[in-house]
Image (cartoon, rainbow, N blue to C red; front, side, top):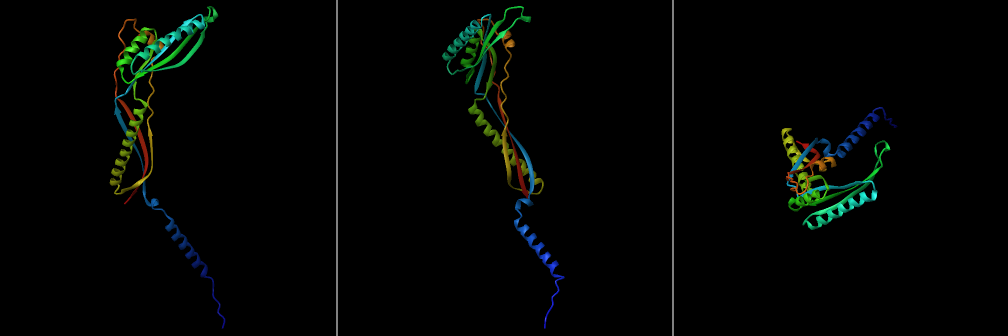
Length: 243
């Protein structure tokens, strides 16, 4: 006796089994993170500290009808400044940009002249030796363009790390507080990025202002008050929360 089977109901059953199989596979492949609540946060941190270095910025300049004469005058000023700096304990000198330019008279009615100049910086851990040296350099005709307290690179690096740690601590505090208010708990931090705030560059007074403020010798050296410096950092994170 032969038997004949109908396939009309076989296809739907096969499709249902296939769908169930795919769904089960997807459930097995699903990651726990997909069920978590994600929270994006930003934290900040700051550290205050006293500066540990003082920097004086100077310009030596001269103007003459002869380019050679103008340059010789500047060279003498710079050499004398370097010699004075060597005698000052704890002072580091840096001789920097040198420039020479031709200055023509108005509408070429007068003969052109030449201007030469060079910048220098003098740095020390305090003002005990640098401020008296600054007064000497002013008396010798150099233009004081800036007098600025700041943090040394080594101290900046140390304080920056402390500020970043404070920013991360702020992240953790926010995450725990907000998770509790949502009736959840912190599973872990999925991503964390930390960045620091660039230190501001010293803003030096212009040469014209400096010239007006240079007192004739003999005169007391300039004064400078040490002000507290603030190092800041920020941190961004994605936090995973669960019941």
